[in-house]
Length: 309
Image 1 (cartoon, rainbow, N blue to C red):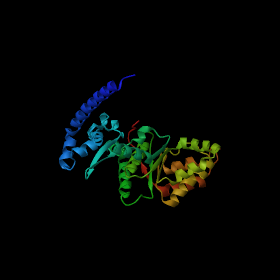
Image 2: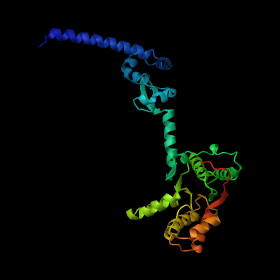
Image 3: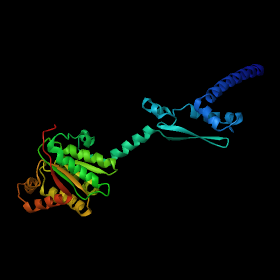
Image 4: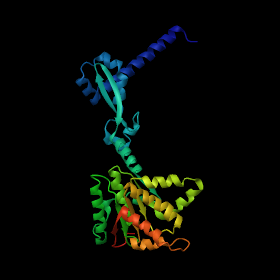
């Protein structure tokens, strides 16, 4: 067992070492350009106030405060990752708080934007489509570009009641047009949903088994902007045409919610397609009702030109 004298000498040595470290730390902190500026602006922070709150000055001084360093891991290494420290002096009291760095703000905005575009079986590249990337040098696309511009211009007042029905040959970019519109809507904080029709039909059929069909149909009815891609590419039953598709379109027509479509068929051709059920029955009247609702919900726009696939 150590003697009291030995223990006392050791304690005094450790204390001296601590004092050296403390003084060096104090010197480093008070010589920091940001801290020096703070002390110049607040002369009431005397040595007593500094010593009492040195840990707060260290907390502020030791962290990244320049968002230009964020891509290299700057703010991500702070006490609160993605937040930068903010210092405030009230009297002789120092307060350190945190605010989002610019990259955190951008990241959250991107995440929020992504939630505005819902999709069902749509390719990722379509979800990143941009009007700026649509080839305007293709005359067959001019009508579509004009129609989109007119639709978006109307949003400045309120959401139009009618969307667009893009139709034309395979591969001319109809689906890309839908994605571009969805991204423009997201920029205006308007939710949309893109649905690939053949997979949508299969999704609804599988939902019958788990009793989720009503919930899913309700979601498609009420989304501010609905986009049905490649309508007519699927073989549908009379039940799906009338009870599912017809119900969704009827609700949106009554509520004035715009709907977009893309199809290889013109409206006349689509009517013929929808009139023939999977059983081979011809139901012209019921197909006509679907076309009537599509006409109430959208304006037909023909897209032609070269294939972009």
